[in-house]
Image (cartoon, rainbow, N blue to C red; front, side):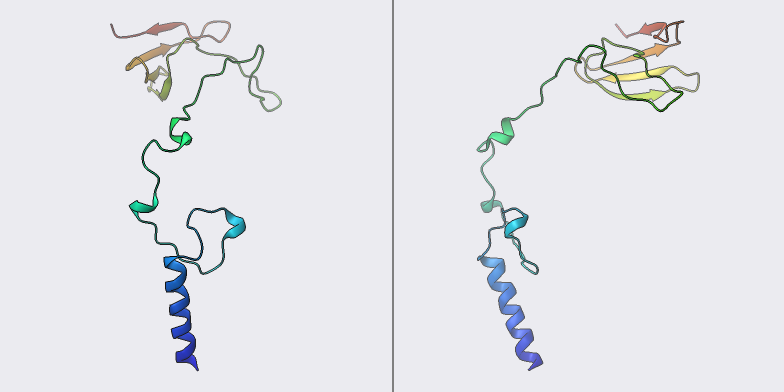
Length: 125
């Protein structure tokens, strides 16, 4: 009886791996124990779906929009006018090195004035 159960289980897995339920479905049609073997032939051709062409777009910041802070803290804009900033590193002296992807450069921002804005900015020429 145990051997029959193991053989039946193996056959059920083999059948479900080859068909019976699409590998590309949502959670409502999934069943426990179903195994999917997805091959390159199962995938859509590159560029065949609209999601491939769905690029992000930049949305302007609404006036006076800023993150919420805990009581006792405030949020101010430190530096603007950066072109696609992707990575910020802090030097031991407090300088900020900002990698800007779009122009392919690193901008160094130093200090803080009385309004909390960056005092100096340097870019390689």
